[in-house]
Length: 229
Ligand SMILES: [Zn+2]
Image (cartoon, rainbow, N blue to C red):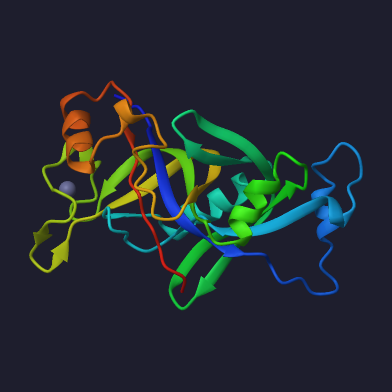
């Protein structure tokens, strides 16, 4: 029996405006997505640290091969603004991505361009001024693999965050299907004001529901806020 995929949201942080060296052909790369050639003063570029391979506070983890997949899926996806209960506004487009390595931490770090239109002015100022400094990625994946028994977490009895012998159970997010969007959110936001509230469940309850019914898709919206490295 095939189970429904998880739709997930994962928090990261804004790295800032990428310092560009002389041979960075950012204009050329942005223009692969624009319908008319843009000049550099027409857009702002930001770098986001979207997701990584460490166990996070919600006891989930991406394996490196799924990060490589996400890295390839991100260019062309929209950057959204999550600012109030009315939802998200598209503000930019991811135009390239790379895998960033720091010791054993691997993360997906895409660059996004935002047009310097009057409408986007406040959005850009809020990022540059550090008000919007957290990010989230919306994506779906098929299999939450239990780190203890390697089975689908919905079919075993292990609880993420609980210790079994020397091991703390977490789940490995496998078979990423789609990257839906990346978002920028105000710092310190707890998420409930920004996402569809009726579908936001704490992990324990979401898992309980998923175990009860394998047919219904479930949506987890953990909020993971990382400080700068
Ligand atoms: Zn298990």
